Image (cartoon, rainbow, N blue to C red; front, side, top):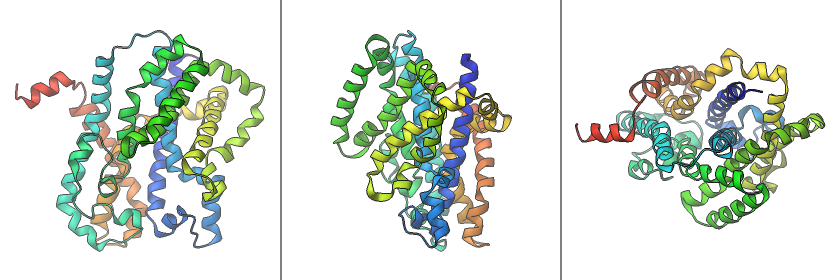
Length: 362
């Protein structure tokens, strides 16, 4: 398999994961879906929709793990293959690729809250939705890439913040995987992450979610061996139906973080199965999924703001639940515009030196 083909598969996976996150928020913002997320079911249909493999259709946290696995793979791979770490250049690229778009949507969201937040008082859906735009949040800590008041602005921002901090160490993990046995690198990484997991707040959460980047990095080093293992045991793919939505199938009898580690194992199987299967390769290289992959970052970044805005305004003239159910059309349209005019428009080619010149008026 050539390099470009593999990247296209990852684009398709990102696109599908972004849609799953979108579906998750729509369902979670309905009263019944929000209750199901707490294992409180209004009927047996919701129980099956939540605690069976059907949960994969709206497994939001699991979809974020997909993004993290792919990010760990893609970031670490060049360093595993011999690239030297030029940390300043890496930080600059990550900043312009990740932080600047995040700052842009954060400021847009803040402005919309100031303008339309008062209208949302008349909208009532689930607890998760109702807290959005309920007050003007403290934007300063969010601009500094800290998890603070995110439920009020846009909860999905948490994964952008954690990705920023975690990605900074992945080049060094890639170099370590090139120079040292994988077992030693994993052991040291687990020990260090365990220490930082004991810290509260963003640092502790970043230390945990680092584990999924680590899985992706290890997969980048050992992809050929994992593929060989899979070819002789394709039957193990069936276990992914249980492993990916593991926390929902086993219920609250297991810690959510522990369950997500099983999710990661299932997603590795799914990734390798896609790479090995000509049929699924074609599916994930289809024009639709590649298109969704191209806009996936913009869709993830903007969809919560778009949905809350649409429901707040449209909910003044129709049932809020109806507005919520049709809001994905608006959210996807806004993501396309953001991708074209912001991600690949005003922010395209922006670097830290150029940004500094603009701020200084030069």
